[in-house]
Image 1 (cartoon, each protein chain N blue to C red):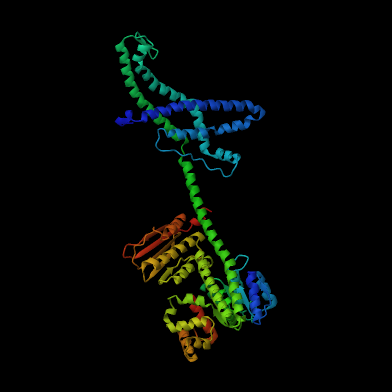
Image 2: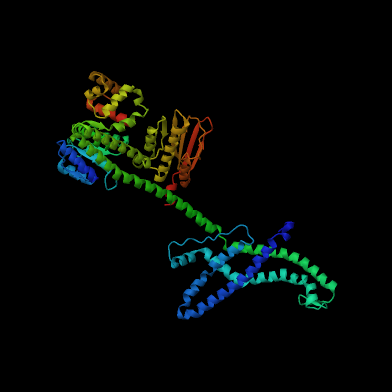
Length: 422
Length: 214
């Protein structure tokens, strides 16, 4: 508005549109509220009106929705509604959800204020800033037509009888109209500020949303983990057992088969079943290693180091009598596995080292190698997913890998977080 | 005596053992029933699955370790062969630690398919031997830590075969050397692992344990 081009921009028109539509809408809302309350009050005698009055409480919801839309006329920054999604289907659940929200009551307050006070004020502002100067500008025209070139009443108060007087009034009108454009802009700005204050989502609403999002993220990770365990269990109790039974049957059949092509076929089938079993065992181990579940992080990291094709020195002494929280153990274990897999795949290192300790309620892990470096956490190295997983536990994962090496991956996870959201 | 929660495998194993002339005195589906059935039937050997109801953790192993530590004086530790789907030296080590370490076996279920090898291993354990699955041994051989680093590659090979329950004669045939040479290797292994002089079987078990814990 402070810019010199304000007057020739679309903004004065937008302000006018906003205020005038506000007047119309406010009048409508007033009528609506009055009708609803009156009908509800009258019909309350025959009980039909009680639910009607109950619905009147929610009148702010559609009004606020409309107002947020109207804000778009002069506000580039859209305001979203922040009502919660009802916890279940059906109008009653929706109704009770709305009733519990602070926002609903703010919206009701806004609707009442809008119907009772805001729109008359807007009407007044629009009249003073727009209609009065407008009619002054039109003074010469009115004098020529209605006043028969003899006289014209300005603002129904002062009578002007000369042409120069009439044009003088018109010039004054233009000046006032220019000032009015600014008044309208200020009024519309103040009005949107007030609207925002009342019906835009507040930090309280957003804060609750953030907490809920954080919790749901933790729940998602937990569910993901539970699912891995379930898959591991199902494979172990199902496919693996059946394959064992199959190899046993084939082994017995081989004993009975006379030497010849049949025995050779059986031997091949037997070997294939054995390979399938071995592959399945590796797969199951990758999904959720039993050693982690039964013996904890230290043993599981030792096991992962044993499996690595690159020699790994393990220096992991957590000095704990009990076990770490399960989520921490799992995240830490998979970080180590992924890091060792990357060492083997990309680094060309001849040695790697895993070290870790537990201090001040935090688990610190470092995986380093003497390879060529240049690793990055993005680009599908699998570390991004692990970083997410660590951050769910309020932990940090950092990677230092200058070209030419060495690469150092370090992880820090606070260990008391596991039960914080429990 | 069999303890295995999968009916399919339990029946299969019963059939297999019966076929090789062994009698299955009881086949049960969980660790509780196993302990009760052992008290009732006093079997020569127990074959147990690591993971069994109700918790599906390592109940089978727990039960096996309990059977290995006899309540009454003078009663020998019951030979136990544990079957598992996991290449996990921790399980094997825990099992060998129980009792005096003889008459135990830790085999992958894959081995059941090698019918004759499986039955041989079973007889070995029943007669007081120690058997560790070759796959677990292979996992161990990939390790490069003390105290095994002091052994020569040949000695490690020999130790791996000892862990699998082979006799000196069988090891000699496998490596195509004389039995005397195997004996020399074993003596050298025992010396390098700082194992105190004791009767030979027991020292062999201790060597295997050192191997598992390294």
